[in-house]
Amino acid sequence: MTELSLRELVADQATTVVVTCGSGGVGKTTTAAAMAVAAADAGRKVAVLTIDPARRLAQSLGLGELDNTPRRVELDAPGELWAMMLDTRRTFDEMVLAHSSKERAEQIFANPFYRTIATSFSGTQEYMAMEKLGTLSATGDYELIVVDTPPSRSALDFLDAPQRLSSFLDGRMIRLLVAPGRGVMKLVGAGLTLFTKAIRTVIGGQMLTDATQFVRLFEDLFGGFRERAEATYQLLREPGTRFIVVATPEGESIREASYFADRLRAEHMPLAGLVMNRTHPLPASLSSLTVAAVDAGISAIAETDPLTAGVLAVHGKLLAINAEERRMLTRVTRAHAGLPIRQIPALPTDVHDVADLRAISL
Image 1: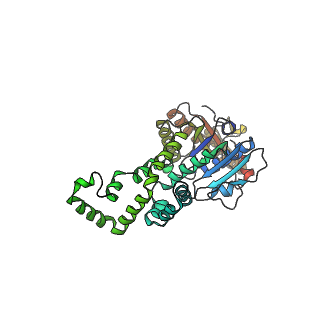
Image 2: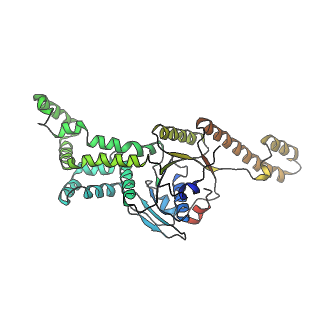
Image 3: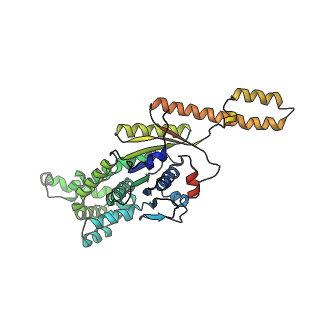
């Protein structure tokens, strides 16, 4: 098994973007924050971006809250650490302001269809995460950007959503609906009236009107959507980008991790390795024991020395847990030969501050 060193990865000047992905509850946000702290300790200027609305990143960095603008974290380190949490609506608004006139931006903001897309449309959050990553990268202010993606299998919507959203906004169906009288719609003739009536019946006349106005206001920005999404997508494929899959040694988490690894490799994304979080390594005193030997010892002294038998039972449970974790790890290494892996032992308490983040074995 190839050992993955996260400290070396983030300290390497050639690493410019690190994206963590994984299912929910595996310690992905904590891993991202720990890597960011390690990069600052190595003397780099790093920004860490979370898309997780649970605000765990702010808590682990000892901050009351984070917002859409990077905030510097007070850190006794040779480098600098900046942190932010994505505000989807604000990022969308900033993008509109940056690429249209003030008057048109105000009209777009007032449109109900825009407000729906900016807050509720599937994929908007991930698209805006890509937009923010691209913006942070374009400033050149940071040597390293660490991105913490949403939990669950939808984390890879981070790759899919930009194309899905830009295709929707720039799609033929919307253009046919909102541009009657142009192009192919001229050929539809009387059928257009029936088609439009049917659409109004399904989605409502006011919504269709709002959508029509939105697309006409937004028309000049469609190309920019696609171009920026493609630019950021290419950034994710560059040699300086690294993807880290985070998992715990449990069946469902391992299956999710395998899915992530397969998908990233299929997309030719630079997969750096797997973090197996919350593992239970054996102390040297137990490394030569087996579960069977411990069970035999418990049986032999259970009645005469119950205290020792109880201690052996605890050791036996640890041996059994470790054996199951090694079995899980073997499954991963067989399915993904050559994939570098980092095992991070479980901590006795939750991570609450920078000192705890530094204590994580990266």
